[in-house]
Image (cartoon, rainbow, N blue to C red; front, top):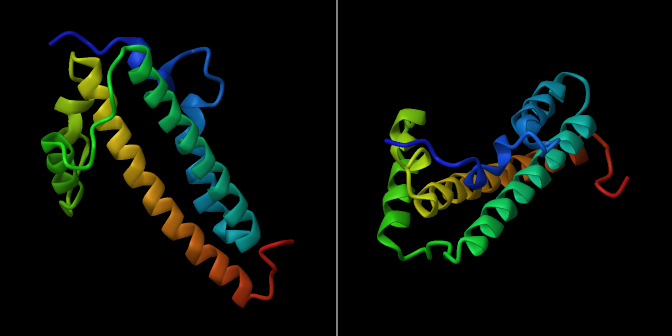
Length: 141
C-alpha cells in the first residue's frame, strides 16, 4: 500500500511549527495537575485549541482536493464511531484508515479521531473548571 501523501497529513509537515507538539501540549496539561488546577486548565485549553486548528487543517485539505467531510450518517463514519467505542482501541484498529492511500479516507478518519479527542478534552476541561472553582479559583481570572 503506498504511503499517504504529506499533503493530507498537515500535522507532520515540517513547516507546521506546532504540529508535532500538539500531543505534547496535552501531556503537559495533564502533568501540570501536580502544580495547580489553573495551570492544568490553561494548558489543556491550549491543547484543545491546537486540535481545533488541526481539524481545520484537514478540512482545508479536503476542500483543496475538492472532497467533502463525511456526514454523520455516512457508513464509514458509523464504522469509525463504532470502533471508537471499543474499550481496547489502539492505533492498529485505525491504521488502515489513517494510512489509506486515498487521501479522502485518510483525512476523514483523522477528522473523526480529532473530533473524538476534542469531545474528550471538552469533558476534561469542564471537570477541571469545576475542580478549579471548588478550590476557590475563578474561571474569569
